[in-house]
Length: 139
Image (cartoon, rainbow, N blue to C red):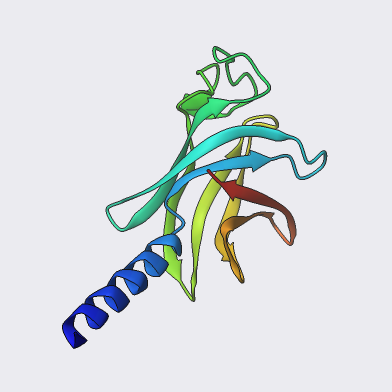
């Protein structure tokens, strides 16, 4: 009986730990209008976190990133990697960058799960001392 209880408890602990990850697909929301914009898949590779746009909700799927700098200029926004090189430190993912395809700008970035709500991701982009914060919802 004790083995059964321990097994069940271990399963619940594993499930709780799994829901605490930032990996997965998130619905993005515009921080100015609150409108849902896209779905971003966040994944880990080589100990770093990355994210790519896997679905556009308000725009044509063949939209190009006209304002994007460098190699992303005039490339499709769909499947574009917009979150790069995030490392886990001090309980959050940071020291990476996030691209705003609307403005064509890269921002330093920190992301973390909202305290008490593992289905809300806090995404904060920094440009110098200024920052913007968005709240994304787990799908």
